Image 1 (spheres, rainbow, N blue to C red):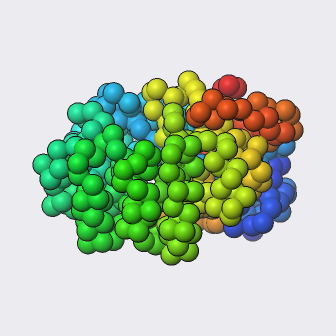
Image 2: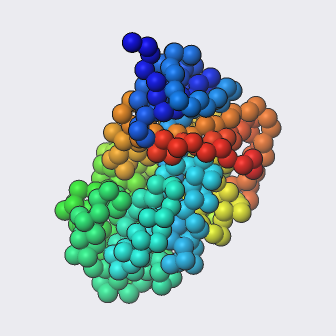
Image 3: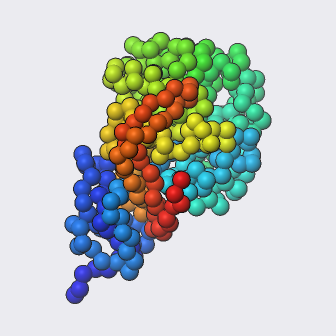
Length: 376
């Protein structure tokens, strides 16, 4: 018998599997929408061949915090515009939809997208559909039973609960909405993603409510309070398994805060964008641009890939399906070019840093189907 032939073989690149300490040369084969084999360079044969010479072959990038409920909210950007068109195979909408609008979100955003679209379901029953004070009316904004029903009925898409815990959202609600989110999450067995920003409530009080697997997004913002206003509680939270996420956004990645955090041992577990239609033209632009900003702050290429693949998949409890190059995993891949060049980057506060390297997406494979990307 001759050698096994696959649907597609990606050859010539460096396989950036986040389970390895460093990328290694190799071939990767795909069959029936799955990673079928990984082998030495030149060892695999396929019906089609994708030349990845000079590129990093990574698991499909996962953006853990986006807003893609378009036109259902005034923030929504089409999923594919910030997904496969930018080299990202999975986007997770962070609370644009609550239980009241789930069916519309699923039918009109999830179903037609080429990008895999997952969701953090907002604890507010109406999500962001009626604006961005979704928890200001207290108990009237929350229907725990309806939220639980959606999470149980759609576990393949609704992967956890989103809640925004900042003064501009909560009115006089305090910690009550977060406690409601944790009750529902505990009954269903899903994590909670918590947006933090302007106090009150105090970040330390929010952190004290969180447990293993929960996510704090916007963890590296430059607003008053933040990590270094609650450093002791932040360290305790990280030690018990709370995850720190970048969530760049229009106002939530400060280079100064991130540099101080890295020096103090607070490394982001995941890197996400909080992309929406008001920051996609800047300062955020894309997930890969955000990864490049973290390179400029001292993380390695393998670290930023791990943060946006394996770690994100683990948060979603999908690491048996996404986030690695293991045979049997979904054939979602991102091909990246790493170039050594001076790159000036801007954070959410308008501060700049000059990095020495830059990542660029060149191609994606989504569910086994390759597509080449246009140069930015």
